[in-house]
Length: 256
Ligand SMILES: [Zn+2]
Image 1 (cartoon, rainbow, N blue to C red):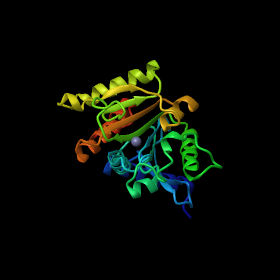
Image 2 (image 1 turned 180 degrees about the vertical axis):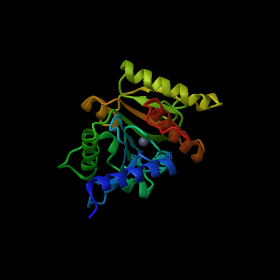
Image 3 (image 1 turned 135 degrees about the vertical axis):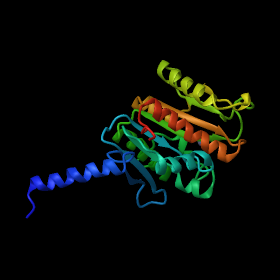
Image 4 (image 1 turned 30 degrees about the vertical axis):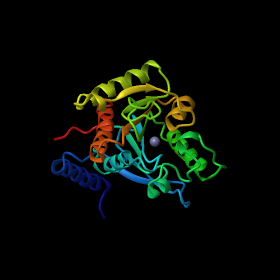
């Protein structure tokens, strides 16, 4: 029979070997999948990327609106390709999975998921979905919420639309400084002035970000690319936005 001491020695040697063979992945993240609205038509996966250091915890949500593809594609890419060495990342690529499958903004069309937070566990299916996302934010005690969206028009052309903006629901110093920093960093890579991002202080009652901020005291950002730009560019921008945040929070693993 193998002694406990010997057992631990074998584990130790195995870990050393792992570190030696895979320095970029060993002792880093693990990804697990859980589901919200399990057993219903709205059942959708939540990817939880964990490291040895729980904090900071950041939630990335996409697919609140099903036809805003760049955020959805970016979230799917990020859950498969991100390497973090610190903190916890919670990624929901297709929040309203039925809207995403139908390629429509809302499903059912008359209920906008982004206006009904914090939802209601006894309400209709979309209210239940909002409530489950709201509950996840609390359960993981997140320190930042990033909600990925797209708009049909540039904000600068028609201020009813939010294309190429970072929307915050309060002008508090922290949120304003954070979003201004992000806009500035994103704009470094953009040549055409018309495509540059601007910060918008516009409280959208009932939205994911509004609820995170006003009900749970969680800093929250809504990122909006403009659908008039090419899809591949927009996906790249959404990925870049999240990566800048993760770099700022010292979560991204250093590329070796
Ligand atoms: Zn949207």
